Length: 224
Length: 225
Image 1 (cartoon, one colour):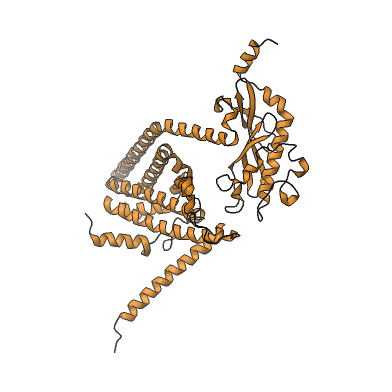
Image 2: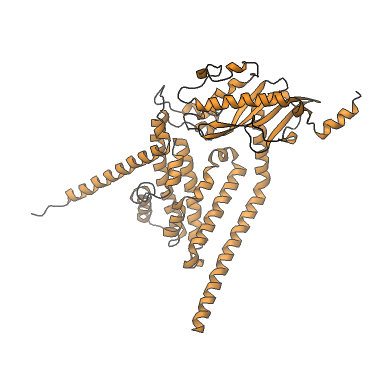
């Protein structure tokens, strides 16, 4: 009886050690690969983010490091955000030329549509991109730039162009076209871009006054 | 080494007799989720094939060191580690491809075919056989995925190979075939029910073809007088 228990204990110990050895080898392999690939992955992630920002903001509009200018914006109903979102501030020389806001269209056909919206200081859209959505493939997904140029029609639009009563899809009597068969998706995007412009207009002063340390310093140097 | 006969058997099992998609009906989750277009289907199929070949090779190489009772946790560990390594390597060194396939790679871990082949074949056979078997199984799955993707893409959007530019760059756009011009689209084919219906049709076709082959064998046999 005792020897049987002993044998079982030895067996359990043996399998335990083997399992441990495999876990150790797997962990070592993973940490080695992670350590070797991490810098490259981080670089491509930054490049990707930069490329995405450049899609909503013409590179000619800024000469600062956009990624470094990232700030947090508290959740706001007009942005559709329930958590703090990111904002990037574009400057050329000393002056702010545009901002890029994250917004969410909560009423898409498949739920939230995440948007990146570039707005210049005058309140005109410099570009819009959809960063995440769950719209129907092949039907509502033409809001992706990779699928169709639909989203480009926002460029140059502002809160007064077209005026609010035309700031809707053509089917609802507005100025933005939408494909037949999928109206809910573009309706949500049009509404969200309009709301983001409202948000910018309302908070323009506060958003543009949120200056980084470099600007605070340069402001002090300039005599009033 | 491996004889030609063994090689043939492994491939005929993978492609037809034990096809994971049509006969074993394993790994249906990615099969149904991803097969909306040919390009998606092919991409996931190739990625799965790569992971299967690597994990079967690894499992087979260590099969003598793994006690029977803990083989499943060890195999899962090996597969998960390999998938993560492949995921990291692709992210770092073929980033454009990763952007397209990236979401599929972690999905492969959830694919029970990989574990099924590791346990049912690789744990009992030599590494070369195991890799060939995994490759054949993966190829069978890829073929089913591509056919399924073609059926759903054609019925759903009237195109073939759409999204090719996401894998091969903007220049590949010219290869997208608009088979049915001005097609309004057929939503059902793209949504999950379309996947089930198309898979059902494929299984039916496969079974019909198998039954016909068997009838022919019977007919060829000499009748008793």
